[in-house]
Image 1: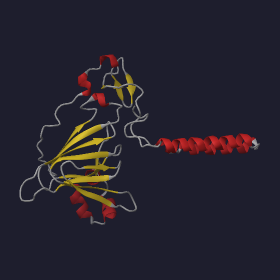
Image 2 (image 1 turned 120 degrees about the vertical axis):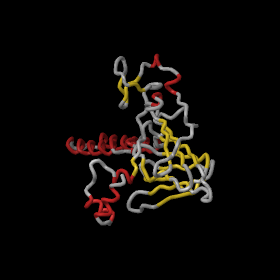
Image 3 (image 1 turned 180 degrees about the horizontal axis):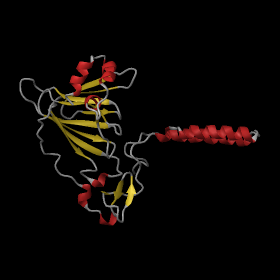
Image 4 (image 1 turned 90 degrees about the vertical axis):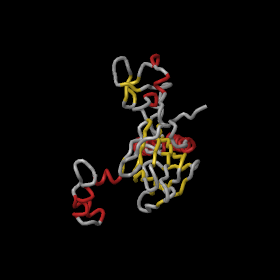
Length: 261
């Protein structure tokens, strides 16, 4: 029997029950005590606002209200759910829930020496509203990098299939603590939602060592923000004086960095 919320929703049922119980007790106390109507209303409004700010708001993708919702672009005869139109369920077929190709080795000739093959609703429309997606990450040789980035809408769990990876994530301000580990085939690591993280291939330096990992994410569209690209390659560019001040660099160095993205 599955949970009532989405696949990535934190387990907060106990806390929710506590909040609801506290709300009920406070509300009943207002009924028992013969307070002036104006005071009772003010307290009720305050409690109501607190209830809205309770842990009920912590969730990932919305929970589906139907068995599935195969994403399509044609609005005719379809229902709009979570940013996409849903195919008529009677017309759904196995291929809507199928993808082939994550076993194929890709060419990793970019600057970082890594390549990410995504599997989200763009490749598998049947993922829509299910709150999950995955990626295959390849690292061409020792020294290749999946650069520091963040997924604003999803946590990530990564398993190494081949090679040796130095991985890590950085906690939020003010600590900015680096939590890192060296992973080998079969090792698993999780990156919390929204935190900056990376993977670096530290295979045998005496020979080219290929590495590959798979990662699952708790959103059908977790998206990605690569830190260097966002800061130095934004469109339009962030004023160089702002970045020079933020990174304690001279303006010429900032302009040089911006020219690379």
